[in-house]
Amino acid sequence: MAKYFTTFEASRLLGVSLPTIVNWVKANRLKAHKTPGGHRRIARDDLLSFLEKYQIPVPPELGESEEHPPRILAVDDDPDERDLLRAVLEGAGFDVELASSGFEAGLQVATFRPNLVVLDLVMPGMDGFAAIASLRARPETADTPVIACTGLSDPATSKKVVDAGFDAHVVKPYRAEDLLGAIQRLLGIRVGQLAG
Image (cartoon, rainbow, N blue to C red):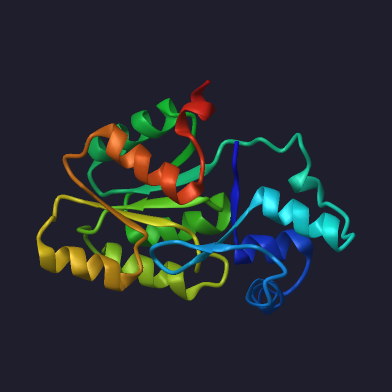
């Protein structure tokens, strides 16, 4: 299964600073690509090639046995929507945690360390736009892929979603394939490989 790392995750894995990783990428020493949201992603195979080329020891987390399912944090204030998200995501083989508000999501991010966040936009208190601003402001989650999942589909909302730094926008009611397809694109995996 292909695996992609954020620049922050790569810096943590290799025990170097975030600017060091960014400098390696800019110098074309470490291969990376950019998501539609403008965030860098480094493929596991490219990271392994880099380590081999520069004779850097491979961290245990990158070893061949490391095949944990990706962690997804799903945030929605509607309990029925949370149940649906859990069913769809766990059914596809993901490790899932749920949150009912942007504030609760902020707390769970620190302990759960999700690989991706699915975030409702309209919630009481801290809405999805405030929540993504908080995620983007923290170094450890600045590059975490975030999908806006909302019933709002008008052009103004779509523009606001892009401007806020979301990596994808899925409109409710959505088909499971649409959500899973967006996750597959952002994490660089084939969802069917997880469940099988």
